[in-house]
Amino acid sequence: MLNTISARQIQREYKRVLQLANKSKEPIVVMANNKPLGAIIGLDLLEKIQLELVVKQALKESKSRKTKVIETVQDLEKDLQELEK
Image (cartoon, one colour):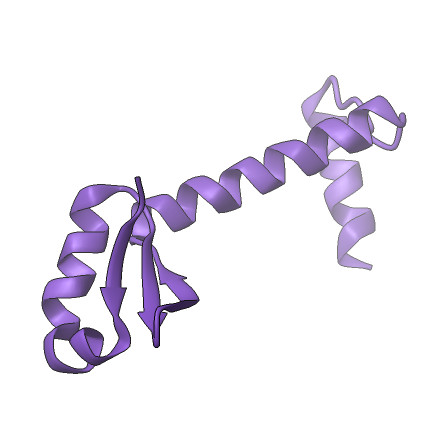
């Protein structure tokens, strides 16, 4: 079950709510007039979500053969020089 909190509670206790979001590792749904408005998540959960998106994108590119295999340091340096241009 998701944690919920009222928008008014956030106004009064924003520090405690943010601490709870960081501790719980789960989103806290913000409610107003018994309707969900959004969610508050901790920084660890945000990093996890961002990392998962990067991994999914990398897998998608790998499956579609859009990635490049770099086998040597020289290959890496050459690619980095090309990127700088």
